[in-house]
Structure formats: C-alpha cells, structure tokens
View (tube, rainbow, N blue to C red):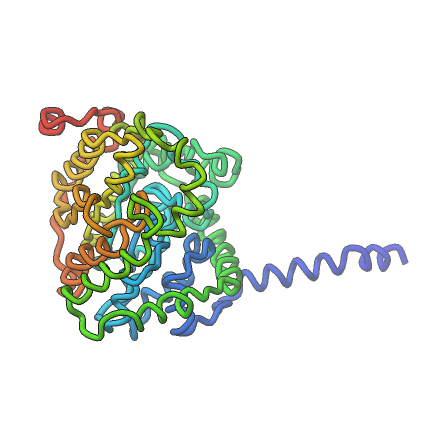
Length: 427
C-alpha cells in the first residue's frame, strides 16, 4: 500500500516529465510554417522569432521566395510607405527583406543571432543598417538581456572548430553578462574559449543535447508568434505606391507624404511622433545632446565581430549609414564634427577590411522629408536607400575579398579619437 501511495503522489510527475522530454527530443519538427506565416514573420518584429532559429531558417530555406536578412535596429520598425519591405512587395522584386532588429539591437546581439542562421549568410547577400547611436561610451548593452537566447550561445559554441581572436573576444564579452555569469552550464565552457582552450568531447555532446531541447522549445514558442503587420501595414502601403517602379514617381509620392505627415512642427518629424514624444518636453530637450559622443565605444569591437562573421561566411553585404535629423540636431546641440568623425571611424573599419559596399547618408539629414523622426530615415530617405538596395540585391551575389584585421577588436581602436591623422595611422 505504501508503494502504491508513493506512486499516486510521484507517478503523475514522472509521467509528465517523461512526456515533456519525449516531446522535446522528438525527431520531428513541432512547428508547421506556411508561406503566409513566413511572409508575416518577415515584418513581425517578434522577439521569439528574432531570438529563435526555426522560423528564420524556414524563411531563408524557402525556395518560393528569396528572403534577404536586413539587420538593423529601431529604424526597421518604421513601416512607412517607402520602407524596403513595401517597395519589394509592391514591385514583386526578386527579393523580400526579412527584418532582423528593433530598438536596442546592436552588434553583439546581431553577432549572436547570426550564429543561428549561418547557412543563410554563407555566400549569400545581406543588408546591414548602422546607427551611430549604438556607439555610445556607457551602458551600450542595456538591452542585451531582452534579446539574449541560450540557443544562440549553443550555436556559437558548437560552430567553434578552431578558436579565433573573435571567439575569445566574444567569450570575454559574454562573461560580462549576467545570463552567462549565473549559468553553471555555459560559464565553464565560455571560460575555456576565453582562455584559448578547446571544448572537450563531453562538452560537445552536452551542447548537442542542449541544442535539440532548445530548438524544440523555440519551435513551440514560435507557434505563438503571430503578427498582423503585413496586412495592417504592408498591404495598405502597396496600394498607395505608384503603379510603376520609377524613382521620379516614388520621390514625388515621398514628398507628398512627408509634407502631409509633418505639419505640426518645424523639425519635419512625423506629427504623431512630435505630439507624443517631443512636444511635452520640447523646452527641456533644447541643447540636450551637446555632450553626446559616438567616437569612443566598445561597440566598435562588437561591430568588428559582426564583420568577422560576415567574412567567415563570405557574405556580400551592403552597409547603410543613417543620418540624423539635422533640424533636430541643431536644436539639441549635437556636434556635427563629432558625428562625422564617428562615421569616418566606421567607414575606416569597413573599407580597410574590404567591405566596400557602403551607402553613406550621414550628410543628408537636412534634406526635406529624408527623416521620419529625429534619428530614423523616412520617406525620401528610404527612396534614396532603395537606389542602392535594389541594384545591389537584384544583381545578385558577388564574390567577396575581405581581409580581417583583429586589431579592430582592441581597446586601442575602441578608444581611438578619430581624426584624419589618427585613422590613417591605425593599422
């Protein structure tokens, strides 16, 4: 009777645990991804999809549609009429952006996300949008916990065949994050990489088991990631666009839209943005950016890790450098010289390593309706960007010739104050 009583207490728990483990270790996928759900996911901005692997790889493996990763941050969320997703959908181009980024996604987050989708990068194309606001001196990884996924860490560790300077750098960066420091499972493995010591066979086997479990969890949670952005934003926008894929017509439409939507302020920012984000604090914001500085930051080294991954995968990348709203920066006191020096530092890092596809719009922030708000490209900005995006992607993959310089991971580079002389002398 005693044994039977214990079974009634613990038996259901044991059975439930066994069923859960069987589900997580099942040799079949736990998610059915249709073409519609893939299309919706491309503009969903769901954190589960961004942090996960299943939906992204389903999209990039889709033979019926060529999804191209667009890496960036909050500018991708501005789904206005001229957004790259709208233009590609309207004119049925031979690509469709898959948007990877939202507010707070910077280079370290993107590097880890890339580990889940290396087949989508290997000898493929990508677009990477750079924001100078990433390159701040302090608190550059405030949003890291929000976008961190253990699955990314497992993918990164299992991809390491021979430890590189980038691997050691990433290990050191991860060991600064609470999620890693508090994890007994990952901590000792990442310390090994940091110390240039290879993982053991036991480590690798544990990682493979953990990957299977985490991938099943990803598939389960991805089932709950639904978005109506395509039907609410993309489809209505395509109806407003000119019938012909013509830049003169697109520019005219961008001008009309920008004029119509920026009527309540002198900064040419969208009416709703000004009303809810600026108007109530306008006086306090005067001169508020005088001390902003983007020239010295650990973000430059994180950005280098991204470049190293692109080089490793031979990814053909177009880099887009956003401007800031000049009318707004004049009001808030953002120093132009500082801003342009930070852009020059990014371009030095890119060009010196063979990343020559750069669309630099840093000097265009004063053009009419180029910006939608204070720091994000809008109607005319997206039209200008499309003049670089469209031919780059429609012409297809071009072989790469990158040559990675690991000195860009160094403190010397992170702290370098960029002047023409300093940038020329850095090797």
